[in-house]
Image (cartoon, rainbow, N blue to C red; front, top):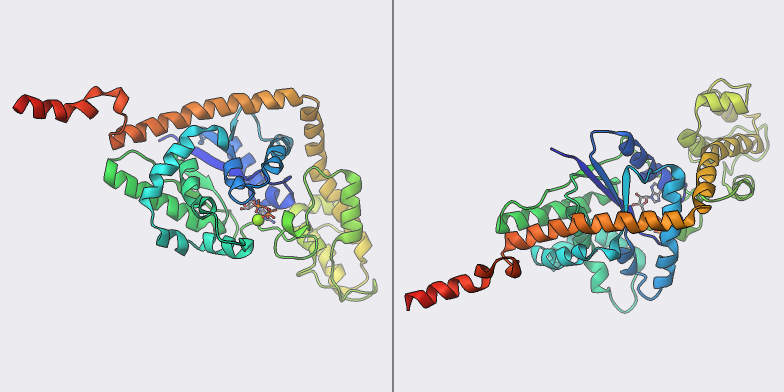
Length: 364
Ligand code: ATP
Ligand code: MG
């Protein structure tokens, strides 16, 4: 069976190292994996509007930022289809029918919805559009016949919800839709990256990010001046803690032993460097300088690719246009298939409307 991937992002801001660790890295692996026939990446502007409806400009402006982020980390427009959600009418069509496949009680029970609602604290009530976004997300997945959805553990309830909707639809209208499988991160930590302030999550709204588009000066300023270390490590000679120390958490996430050895030749491995820090005698400034090199080594090819695409911004627009057009066709086909399964494709077959009436007339 052909395998198809659906992933995406809400274009609410530039992407950061957390996005790289949590999702972009995986997508790059998937694009190299020939067992996947198609990879669709959705710029989920409609979904972003559910809680930003009064500020469509913000969403509009971030479409190009996120697309440049994709291209700069190496998502290949010849391999991946980038599509703008709002331009795909089939998604709205499918959402409308899928809304009948789920109860309000079931949506209220969805743990992801629950925690998102707590986080957002909508004043004056929850917009219905936001409340039903798991249903629209189901349409996003189903509309591409996606078999595989790579997401974090926190998105598990969303995939379960999608599978339930698909199963209900299929049980009523016949086998029509593919129930998607979740593809979880490889390691138990779920690849969640902490913020530069030590907060459990790097997140735009927490203002604790290193953005993929940050230049060398900005990254230097963040690492050297803003990044948290071990608050108990006051003098260089003091023993230090590596657990919960952001610098070491990032070295764990991004540095190879080879890099450690290159940027701090007195250590063969990161473990050796950690041992020295724990014993005392290794200063934070030195550790930060090593980390800065490591992050710049990661980001520098991204910066080059970004520059390449920024110089060809009209081409980027054309990619979005052509890819979205392809996605319109793919999703329209699925929506037509659903309409046929439901027997509401009235203008494809005259008998759907007139058939029984004619039978009845001939029996009179
Ligand atoms: P916002 O502050 O607007 O919520 P954000 O920076 O937290 O933005 P999201 O748009 O909420 O980012 O994240 C979307 C997806 O990106 C998440 O579901 C997750 O897969 C991935 N992601 C975001 N931040 C991180 C992170 N710090 N570590 C790992 N993955 C992340
Ligand atoms: Mg978030």
